[in-house]
Length: 215
Image (tube, rainbow, N blue to C red):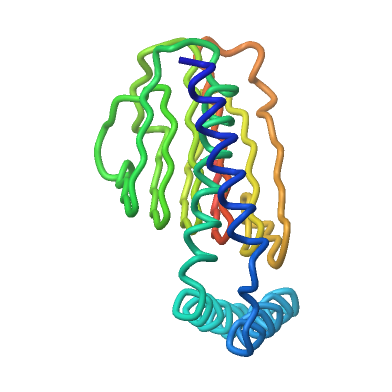
């Protein structure tokens, strides 16, 4: 299974890179990229609403003018997901889900906390770990995709480790927000080693908004 996953991952990344190497940069694409850059500039200067508006317009223009580019990015992201998913989970006992669009409302009622890897083109995830009921001593949850919005609530009685990366967008950790391009967060709770139940959350999006709160 591991060898097959590696082959699939390498294949998808190669196909995506070959598609990207073609002549895809038209005038409309150039305008879209300028809008994306201007949106990032606005976000970095505190004008969040206008910044995300420009990012959204730029993304739509790229989608309309460069369907092949969008497919290529999706294939590269999916290929990286296969590799990351296998690397993150030390055993075979985990759930793997792939979909175009997904929505996780795990902040309304108790839910069973299982090790899993999730990939989507568009996704929204609301996770409250205080409502999670762990099935194992260490739970590993991986979320990857093209565009995603995640809200994560962390109680103080779990040992939690977080790895988060957003190429375009923002990461808000307990009120401290970094916006713009290539935002990364690595964090481990002080009680991680001593707690009986541990949770590792890995999040990676090309365009995303991640909001993490300590409760």
